[in-house]
Length: 552
Image (cartoon, rainbow, N blue to C red; front, top):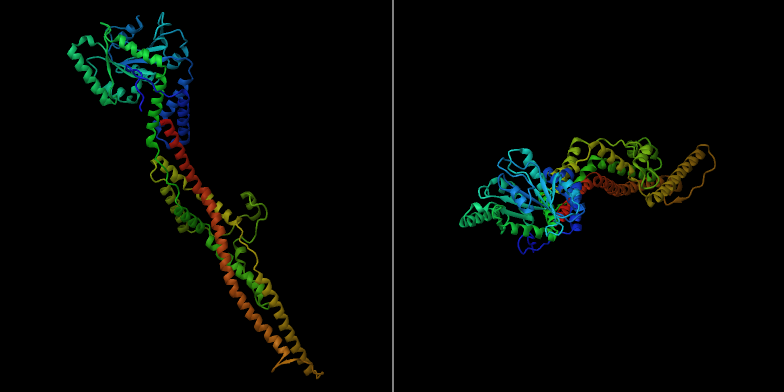
């Protein structure tokens, strides 16, 4: 249920508490701090002023209610305040404009200097004998004309209107429909209906029927401005008509002591509404598919396929070196090691949280070929897709911030990708069949050599006509021959089986290393792209919630 206007007859109040005002102002300030330059500048600047104003106004000691009489030239504001005070507080006359600086009339003896200093109102009048007056606590300010020919007067009126608690719009039968009043002030401040009084002054210049007609027309204009069902109060300083009713309205504002909180609450709502276009209703986040595309592009840019192929070849070479035919293993020593060529053949021992400096100090930089232009373009495209998808539906400034966060510096990114590859373990446990096949190859080689030596000894003994060397025959074949041929044939066959198993193991080792590398690349992607994007989205969410909190 919307609060009733405490300035209308029979109106009650439902203003925010000081604590709630402070909480909302703090929420608004936090939203401005988090949103920063991603918010629209003019509404953000206005919201910052409002948050400061709420803190300053609620921090002032005292229960005063500040009411501003604002109107056009010749509307009779000064005469009206003189009539309410009962003394010549404001200067009146035929020369226009008469009021050049704000003048304050103060009811009651409670100190009001700090408040008037905050309002920057220098001309002050203490109403005599007002301690027991029902208006005690009222500060009535006569403003310069808001349509004055002097720009300084108009600016001063606008400045004070930003700070007061209650607006009293004073108009007259000639200017009640003036566009300046309605378009520049009443319509702009339509959210402040709870602290607004509209006075049609100089009604003594109208007939009874004419007065009713003008009042009805003015109420129609107010309804168009956004002040629905707002009652117009007719006054005349010459006849005294309506002055008692105006005093009663002011007394109601003073007695409730909540006009300032009504005004500040409206200020916060208006400022928060002004920031509404600077945030969206929600965030889309980073799609899993977009992240997977980014990791894949970064993996190609970091040379992961090259590293995986080198790991597989390195596994096959080591397998052949351990399980191949012993008589030809030495040939493989002349072939360059794939991982060594990439400077990835050394492991960093120590804690898992070793720093980049430590890695560089121990390993230096890899020799992985730089990424091709197509690989770099793929990374840029994947980053842009993340920025576009995550920023979808956000206001332009936020969408641009998301896009910027999704594009890291190429040089830094290349260094981190290289470090991620170097920090990833490219080794694994040695297969058990390596030891078995290696032992069998040694035994078969020994058998072949033994058979060869046996045959050589037999041949030498026959040539030297020495006694015959005994041999054991297995069927039609002599044992030395079987040892030689069997050792060679079985050794070659075992080497072929080892080559086949090495191919399977190389593919598995490559797949394992590929997962490790992509996991490491994924961490770089998260740190350099995903997390910055998500931080911007989190800032947007916190900014939106702060604005909603201020809006209430």
